[in-house]
Image 1 (cartoon, rainbow, N blue to C red):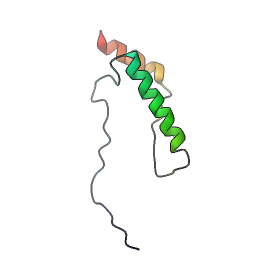
Image 2 (cartoon, rainbow, N blue to C red; image 1 turned 120 degrees about the vertical axis):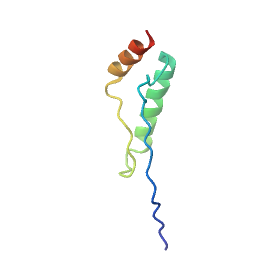
Image 3 (cartoon, rainbow, N blue to C red; image 1 turned 60 degrees about the horizontal axis):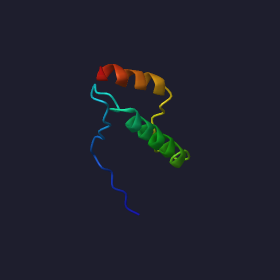
Image 4 (cartoon, rainbow, N blue to C red; image 1 turned 180 degrees about the vertical axis):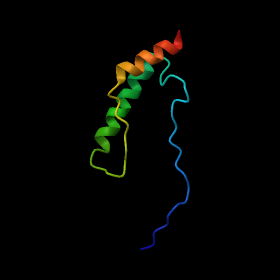
Length: 67
Protein backbone atom coordinates (compact mmCIF):
# COMPACT_ATOMS: atom_id res chain seq x y z
CA UNK A 1 0.00 0.00 0.00
CA UNK A 2 1.42 3.36 -1.04
CA UNK A 3 0.76 6.55 0.88
CA UNK A 4 1.19 9.99 -0.62
CA UNK A 5 1.65 12.98 1.64
CA UNK A 6 0.56 16.27 0.13
CA UNK A 7 2.82 19.14 1.08
CA UNK A 8 0.39 22.01 0.90
CA UNK A 9 -1.10 24.37 3.40
CA UNK A 10 -4.82 24.08 4.01
CA UNK A 11 -6.62 27.40 3.76
CA UNK A 12 -9.25 27.70 6.46
CA UNK A 13 -11.19 30.77 5.38
CA UNK A 14 -12.77 33.10 7.89
CA UNK A 15 -15.22 35.93 7.73
CA UNK A 16 -12.60 38.43 6.55
CA UNK A 17 -14.16 41.01 8.82
CA UNK A 18 -17.53 40.63 7.13
CA UNK A 19 -20.73 39.26 8.69
CA UNK A 20 -21.15 35.49 8.34
CA UNK A 21 -24.66 35.99 6.99
CA UNK A 22 -26.45 38.89 5.34
CA UNK A 23 -29.85 37.98 6.72
CA UNK A 24 -31.69 35.64 9.07
CA UNK A 25 -32.43 33.09 6.35
CA UNK A 26 -28.75 32.73 5.49
CA UNK A 27 -27.84 32.51 9.17
CA UNK A 28 -30.36 29.73 9.75
CA UNK A 29 -28.91 27.78 6.81
CA UNK A 30 -25.40 28.17 8.24
CA UNK A 31 -26.59 26.82 11.59
CA UNK A 32 -28.54 23.97 9.96
CA UNK A 33 -25.55 22.90 7.88
CA UNK A 34 -23.21 23.18 10.87
CA UNK A 35 -25.49 20.97 12.97
CA UNK A 36 -25.69 18.39 10.19
CA UNK A 37 -21.92 18.32 9.78
CA UNK A 38 -21.47 17.85 13.53
CA UNK A 39 -23.73 14.79 13.43
CA UNK A 40 -22.21 13.42 10.21
CA UNK A 41 -18.63 13.65 11.46
CA UNK A 42 -19.19 13.03 15.20
CA UNK A 43 -17.16 9.82 15.17
CA UNK A 44 -14.30 11.17 13.04
CA UNK A 45 -11.23 12.41 14.91
CA UNK A 46 -9.71 13.73 11.68
CA UNK A 47 -12.57 16.18 11.02
CA UNK A 48 -13.17 19.42 12.91
CA UNK A 49 -16.50 21.22 12.74
CA UNK A 50 -16.65 24.62 14.44
CA UNK A 51 -19.36 24.70 17.07
CA UNK A 52 -21.62 27.73 16.81
CA UNK A 53 -22.40 27.99 20.53
CA UNK A 54 -22.22 31.78 20.32
CA UNK A 55 -25.01 32.03 17.74
CA UNK A 56 -26.65 35.01 19.43
CA UNK A 57 -23.34 36.87 19.52
CA UNK A 58 -22.71 36.14 15.82
CA UNK A 59 -26.19 37.28 14.88
CA UNK A 60 -25.82 40.48 16.90
CA UNK A 61 -22.50 41.20 15.18
CA UNK A 62 -24.09 40.65 11.76
CA UNK A 63 -26.85 43.11 12.61
CA UNK A 64 -24.32 45.71 13.80
CA UNK A 65 -22.38 45.43 10.51
CA UNK A 66 -25.56 45.91 8.48
CA UNK A 67 -26.49 49.23 10.12
